Image (cartoon, rainbow, N blue to C red):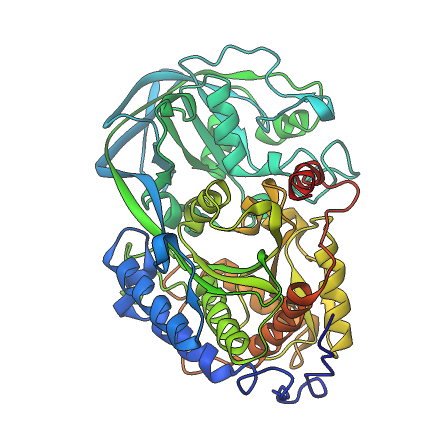
Length: 548
């Protein structure tokens, strides 16, 4: 590290010392709060991709990056990168029903189930499709696991559990204990059931293994879904996909002569085989409006002074869930203040202080990425179409969901990435009077739910940094209570909004740590690396050979 950076923060609980070591007057909590207030305002309409909210968001971020003093880093000398996507939205009413034992049960979309489709059709008409329970829906040869056992799922709807088989077992098994693997993610379930040839998928929602309540499923599931354009899209998607309430699943299994909890226990073993849910069938009909849209990543650039062909990326996603059904207070806008206007505010503020100081050796890119909430689409598109070579991208520092509740004693990263950046973050935090907390909720699978994952899959060392839980005012218990309340009531909901009680002091402390870490990487000679046991190490080793 070429620039010595002494202690930047005062004693815990005090106002951060925005010393001259951080240029531009230091990280300013008022700036962070102002950016969030604007981005999460009603005028930005919940920042959904390909809407008027996107236009306002992109314009605001571009203008603020210009003010910050960085240059355009997008395509053809612009500030943006076009991200073409297919958008699919259920149009009109959804008619759905279960039939079992000669009786028909009408299902309410949004209440009993949430149904959608990315199949390349404009209408879904599924009639009396047999229902089959496929356990956790996992095919993992490297773990000796196959939930399907050559079952023929053609024309059938698979009922599948969320998370991994280890989540509720007493001892770690084939899936790393309670720390969810990619096999536990709902995205994997949909992908795998398409490969298995199923006509549809219904994931059973349970709050603990899903890590969020039904309100989040409903809000997300009733919104438009997105995919990259594919000439063979039918290969990648079942005709119908969605979620079902746990109580509905328990009732369905009982009517089929099965015990839901007993079948779940059976699914936690390698010996599991799929089982038909009696004579149960699903019928569903709804129209799908499909169109192609272009959304945008916003990218600012600060040219490196010495090794400008090498890059460090700061990123955060700008999108939220737009306008939906009004909440109890009549508010239809899902403002996305914590998730993730806080991250975008951090990226803008980092651009400002870096531009105000000595030029880093490596080039810095400041990215506000699109469509993270739609499956990491913006980050995935950039990783497939990089504007700076990934082989020469040293690291990605992604920022998510900083706290509005004041200072914490710690800073955290998401998941267990087995990447040297986690140790670097710990070292920098401790050198500046903070602690580092590994992800306290590995079972939620956050490692696979943030934009850094798209870069990681391409081999680039990457982490997502977020708020710690050890509050100066309230300790870990207080921090956990606030976090749990947020996920229970405001995650992806209208109440994720900026208020006059917003306290960005903790955000400023976290962003100061990110400045120091990014400066170190940008000025240092070393390359961050994946550690032994990382599934991304091989991809990076291949790119290192290309770099050399």
